[in-house]
Structures are given as C-alpha cells and as structure tokens.
Image (tube, rainbow, N blue to C red; front, side, top):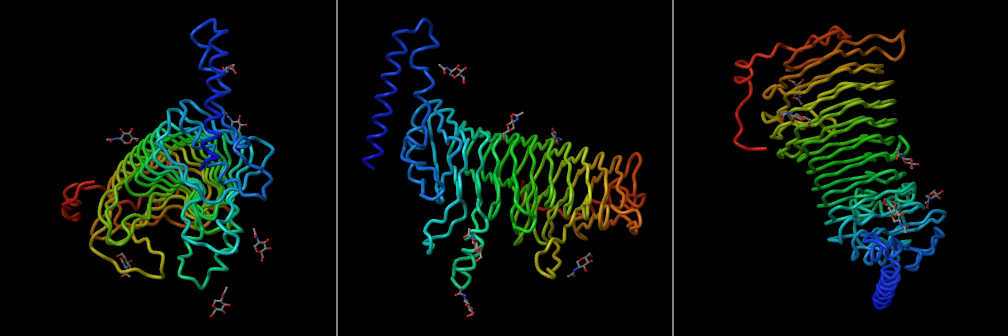
Length: 433
Ligand SMILES: *[C@@H]1O[C@H](CO)[C@@H](O)[C@H](O)[C@H]1NC(C)=O
Ligand SMILES: *[C@@H]1O[C@H](CO)[C@@H](O)[C@H](O)[C@H]1NC(C)=O
Ligand SMILES: *[C@@H]1O[C@H](CO)[C@@H](O)[C@H](O)[C@H]1NC(C)=O
Ligand SMILES: *[C@@H]1O[C@H](CO)[C@@H](O)[C@H](O)[C@H]1NC(C)=O
Ligand SMILES: *[C@@H]1O[C@H](CO)[C@@H](O)[C@H](O)[C@H]1NC(C)=O
Ligand SMILES: *[C@@H]1O[C@H](CO)[C@@H](O)[C@H](O)[C@H]1NC(C)=O
C-alpha cells in the first residue's frame, strides 16, 4: 500500500514538473499539461519483471490504479517482455479515455501453484469502466493446458470444473469500450466476454485456440447492446461469436471463423428462463471447418423472443450444418418437450454459399411456437465432396419463403406464412422482452 502511494506521489510530482517545464516553453495552448509522457504508465516502472516466471500481478494493479486516476492515460505493457499475471480485477470508474496498450505478452498464471482458494471464473476482469480502450500488437495468452492440469488436480474437490477454467478477458457493466488489434490465445474458456455492457467495439483482433479445447467461445455477448465486431480472425473449440439473452443491436462484419462452431445465437431459455435477442446483423463472414455456420438454438420450456436477425453474405466451407435453427436444444441425450418455447421470427438468410459436410439446412422449430418469417434468399449449398450424398433441407414447423435461386431446392420445405394460422398456433405470453 505504502509503496503504491509513494510511486503515485512520484508520478504526480513528475507530471507536475513536466507540466511546468512544458508551460514555460509553451507557444500555444496545445502544449503544457498535455505533454504525453506524463500520461504513460509503464508496468515496468511499477515493479514488473516481465520474465514470464515472476508474478507481475501486483505491478499491473498498481500501474492500473495510477493510470486510472489520470485523464487520457495509457497503461503500457511493453514489447519484448512476458508478464505473468494471476487472476485480477481491474476496475473503474477511471478518469476519461484510459488506454491499455499491450505490446508485450500477458501470460495467465494460477493464483497459487498448488492450491486454489476460490473459484476463478475470469482471469482479466474489467469492470465499471467508461470510455476505455485495449489496443496494441501484443498477446494475451490464457495458457489453457495449465488450467487443464489444474482441473486434473482438483477432479475430486467440490470446486465446479467450470470455475477452474476462467474466461480470459471479461468486461462487466462497462460502456464505450474498444478492443482492437490484440491477440487473445489459448483460453481455458471463453476468450473475450462482454456481460451487461453497452456501446462496444471490437476491431482487428485475433483469437485462437485449438479445435479440441472445450467451451472456448471466441467472443461471447450477454445482456449487452449496441455492439460492433469487425475485421477479426477467430478460431476456437466452440462458438466463434456467441450471442446470449439480453443482446440487441449487434453488428458483426468481416469475420473469419476457422475452426469452431460458427456464429451462434443461444442456447436460450434454459431452465424455463426468459430470453430476448433482437436486431442482429451478421454480414460478410467466412466460416470454415465448423460444426455450424449460422445457428439459433433454444431450449424447450423457455419464453421470450428472437427476432429481426439477418445473416447476409456468409461463405461456408466444410461446415457440418451451415444453416440451423434448433428449438429442441439439449446437452444431454434427451430433454422433455414442453409447451413453452422462445419464439423465433423474422430471420433472413441472404447470400449463403459454400459447402457442407453433413446437411445444408436444418429448421427444427417448436410444435407449440413455430418459427415464422424465415426468408431464404440466394442460398447455394453443396456437399463438400462431389461423391457425397446430397441431403435435403429439413423443415419442421417452419414458416416462411425461399426467394431467388436456392440450392438445395428442398429449402422450399418452408411452409407458407399464414398469419391467421400462426396466431392460432402461437399461444400468447404475458411477458415483455
Ligand atoms: C502526443 O500524442 C499525440 C497523439 O498520439 C501525437 O500526435 C504527438 O506527437 C505527441 N506529442 C509528443 C510531444 O510526443
Ligand atoms: C500439464 O501436464 C502435462 C502432463 O502431465 C505436462 O507435460 C505439462 O507441462 C503441464 N503443463 C503445464 C502448463 O503445467
Ligand atoms: C480421485 O478419486 C479417484 C477415485 O476415488 C482416485 O482414483 C483418484 O486418484 C483421485 N484423484 C486425485 C487427483 O486425487
Ligand atoms: C491489426 O492489428 C495488427 C496487430 O495485431 C497491426 O499490425 C495492424 O496494423 C492492424 N491493422 C489495422 C488496419 O489497424
Ligand atoms: C432490424 O435490425 C437491424 C440491424 O440491427 C436494424 O437496423 C433495423 O432497424 C431493425 N428493424 C426493426 C424493424 O427493428
Ligand atoms: C419433441 O418433439 C419433436 C417434434 O414434435 C419430436 O420429434 C421429438 O421426438 C420430441 N421429443 C421427445 C423427447 O418427446
């Protein structure tokens, strides 16, 4: 504590001196206190070693506290170093426009070598921030193999296995966040998660984990609105981008997903819960070597709505099922059917082309709450191998229409929308999304 106060004091004194010097030679208003160097907080100056062996968590937290207090500050993680960091929470509120500039590598460390005192659900946990940026050409490495070893050690303990595999970078209750250019690799869980956030931009990031790593979503959104994710490369063992309940106004553009499970909305409505997702635009996405291309999955028994979702210009290659709606989602061998279901409406698939390895299109909608307003426009899907058996599209309780050239022709299995019929089929709910 004392050390921090001292270094903070030194920093301020320095800032003051620099400001004074600056203002003496200032010729215009732009000089003076605006000198940049006083706003750069290098983690090395706060005692970080950066050899990848010693734990630099305390230095990171100290540098964060100092930078957080100053407007337009930059917390610098310099290149050519590896900073080993234990799970930390870096929280606001901070002064405006804080930047975390990652040029070196941040490596995940276990809290203690042999024992785990509490659950770790996230590793770099950012919360209560406003107008904050993470940028730089550096790497955030989740070291998943280390956590896999940890779960082996703890296999007989009461700690739930998920608690041993943290999300690498998580934002909670934060606004005006930009994450750009960095790489996030080898996560034990989700790589980049936004929970209860608003006004989020992700740009030019690279996310990579081996295909075999379970539950390693690339980017995971929950209860988050007004999001733009662009120009990024994502490869992992689970969903490339996963959109959960409470998300709206989500724009995803120019993304490569390879390998993984593609772009997913859901699973929604688990445990009879309420789910609301609306206004999602997924544009210009390449999905390769994946379980699905674009899919929506909901559990039986949930309530709520998924509506106004557009998937456009999606190129798939060697994808098991490129287009999928599954209202019978279940992670066990079988789940009971229920009368409630999250309703799915106004879903447009436009310009979906490429190759599938199992089936082209699967719409499995609820008996009591059918899918409505499904539009297939210019869809062209063929088997990945020419000698392979061409499958038909599968439709169950799915209302909508196919437009323009559509291959397979069986995509015409959609039933014609008939509003009167659907009103009878769909029972009213007394909830609001
Ligand atoms: C301060 O930062 C701005 C923007 O990054 C840059 O254009 C300017 O040259 C910097 N000034 C100094 C003195 O380094
Ligand atoms: C995890 O365990 C394997 C096998 O016991 C070992 O080879 C590997 O080095 C361990 N990884 C870490 C990061 O401790
Ligand atoms: C966990 O329990 C099983 C069965 O009791 C035992 O064989 C195994 O060695 C235990 N694992 C650890 C890491 O203690
Ligand atoms: C994207 O990020 C990389 C670093 O990871 C950087 O070298 C490159 O300039 C960035 N591209 C753009 C367009 O900003
Ligand atoms: C549907 O979603 C798109 C994309 O987010 C949005 O621009 C549009 O306004 C929405 N339409 C309606 C009727 O809400
Ligand atoms: C649930 O309903 C679907 C569609 O009617 C049916 O195919 C499936 O067999 C049912 N599942 C169970 C477990 O009853």
